[in-house]
Length: 159
Image (cartoon, rainbow, N blue to C red; front, top):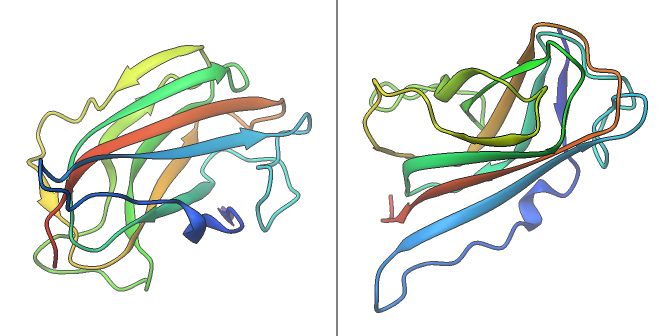
């Protein structure tokens, strides 16, 4: 099982801490080329079932509320995605543990559409440190061009 990291993930613009509230939507994009490899990443291999794609950074002090996955160009048939987070430093936190399916498991990224967070058993958490937004693939290997936009909604509340 491989781990693929998008290049320049730290360049995402984050806003918040404005007088009228801290609600923020962070946008993350996952695009694959015709062979199924993540564009602008550290890997040229096609995404295999079970691979973890580190899409971008969720900043420390960000309270996670919701997500919306917009699949514009569907992934290969039978490919699903589990959407969650893992700490950038690789060390888990006892108060807010890493959660590979915080936003949902088995999201049908093989079909164009809009998919809200589906893990209804979790409560909003505030990240104590930077974390990667992760997409873990399942169901099948991915072999085509695809595109998905993931919007994560939350508040910048500080650490």
